Image (cartoon, rainbow, N blue to C red; front, side):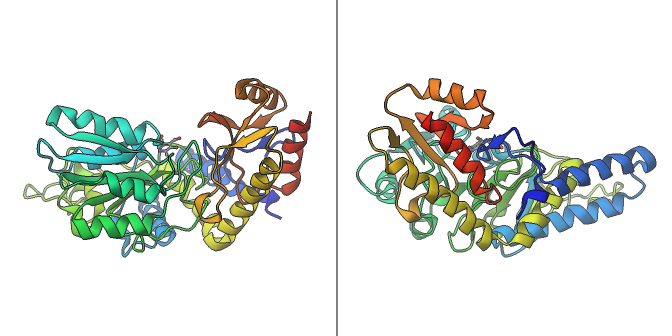
Length: 373
Ligand SMILES: Cc1ncc(COP(=O)(O)O)c(C=O)c1O
């Protein structure tokens, strides 16, 4: 049904959206058109490009249900946005940040780097018997200034209950930061319901955009609490008044965008977002979860051959299903799959499959048939 939007080569079974996604047809077309326009007319239509930039912020506002598109900045990637938060917050020696023991390096090293200011990084063990939220909340203490978690873990695929975490943080005056790169574009996300202060996600995974353009949400009420570390013309309130000597940073999240925007990325992601919003996040989520359920059922019916690393409870997974073969090392099975042009990844101690909403069921069957040998 969605195949015309994804002209993927027939030889490939693409189960790697948790890494880098293929572009939809319309995204490839938008980039080609932007290239042709640049070659023929240069930046003559710059106001039109700025209009696309604004439209993209509105699309992203809708995607996460932000109160305003003024709370959204376009940065380079998830790691950059995490760094803006880490180096913007006012730390005191003895403060701590809580993360989990399953985070991607970007959501660990940036906090560990604050050790030079006497800031401790505490890891909640969410792999044990307690619910992950209980484990996280038990790790907070009266010196915790920030909780920073992935909405969906990149390795295990575990989905956290963000509203529970956000409510606890708000009550205790702890800032709440969500790395949403494994969630946005795959499952529904409501930044107001989860009471996040900061959310970040690059476009190249479930949002079906290119690498190098990322959403950074910063709640208006906490925006001025982040000290700015980068300066330039684009982050000024009065940005086109180049003669103005009496400047101030923008009151919106544009204050985090120091210089010229990534216009190619903006045009590409804008096109991808039209597909996501036209399809609708509730439809996308339903299809993503159906694909995950299908794979989870397949692996859990064969406990003598596979160990599922992804949790099986319905509210605990999103688009990632990671499994471990019992009778051979995951590396050799991964090599076999790669040799057969199944695009997947070795992560979280097993093999990670991550189809998207449009992945035809017959392609999933073909991948599972290869496992049968
Ligand atoms: C949970 C998570 N956070 C961050 C990243 C890296 O993001 P970026 O390259 O946008 O900094 C990844 C990439 O795999 C990820 O899975």
